[in-house]
Length: 358
View (tube, rainbow, N blue to C red):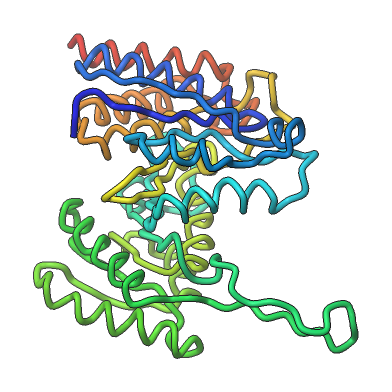
């Protein structure tokens, strides 16, 4: 990729602008220390714009975002907007329209971070979930019959195409190769009940496995996956799964890595525009109080730079994040960190500079 990047910034709602501001401070420092350049274009998408204008994601804005190298997203969600409107008309529309067919979620416990799992530490909790991001139940296939009557029927269809499943699984194999840890890929599904959808997933998984003989493969039902994530998380290296199951197990993953304050993710189109975001919501009750944890947004910036092949900058940010967590923070929870939101960002800058100048 080029060393000059066009980055679309969507600060979003609630505390989104606060944490994105800290991520942008870190991005600026990384660019100065590591010698790349970028251009920011900011978009006021979210609840406030919707309440003022009735607009969610205009087609003209979508086309501009399509031309960006990456998108940096804060959080979408407003207490005065009915749930589902912003999520479907902004978040899902972005993912589907930009064909961001991979949701990439690292689950990594850093030293000094508490996990609710007894006797497990950073050595045991370090895996990645590759979630299919544009198909499954989230497509919205289905409808109602006899709505509002005692005989009402609601149908929600899971749409799985060979193309969609194959490209997701192939991405997971390639990612497992590049990660070069245990070289083990686990398919998470429910073949004993969802006999059509996961027959397609399992057949495709087994067929592609032949192209990657160095990758060990196994399979686990989604309920067993949740159980082993808690009991023996060290069993996992990379997990690949469908949209719904991926949504569920990545929230469990966020909790075992220390909570939403540290969890970040990417919505990836390897051939187009990808989007990176902190996983926690907009947390409107903390807006403007300088108490919310910006580390997830900073980690999303780190993921974004890694995706842009600025590996040195990404590694510098990650090590600084680890330094701040281990040496400076009392907790990852909002209001309990021992520092304000902007102070955490400043501390990351301090440790980046210290490491770079060693």
